Length: 115
Image (cartoon, rainbow, N blue to C red; front, side, top):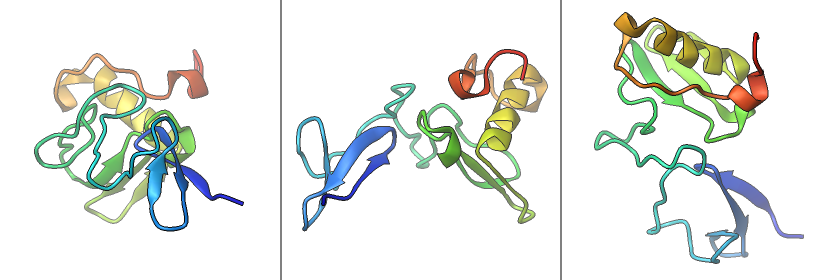
């Protein structure tokens, strides 16, 4: 059985030696791709392109189209995962004074309207 997963929103598999993209079989190492959900590249600082640098946040991931993989790790040690993380990202867009102007909604397919 072949192990499979996702890397930045792209399906990948383990060939016994390295992880490869399922669509073209190239190794993931040395073949960085933009996000498979929004298409944005990482920032020069290495952050997800759709998130940028978030004040007070140590690490964050948009989930790249997979709600359960989204997370926020605050400098205080508090963490949000999955739908809670996506709601946090959306709250920043809904309150534009809190951060950069990005007209993006994260996880809209998973969260749904009115959630």
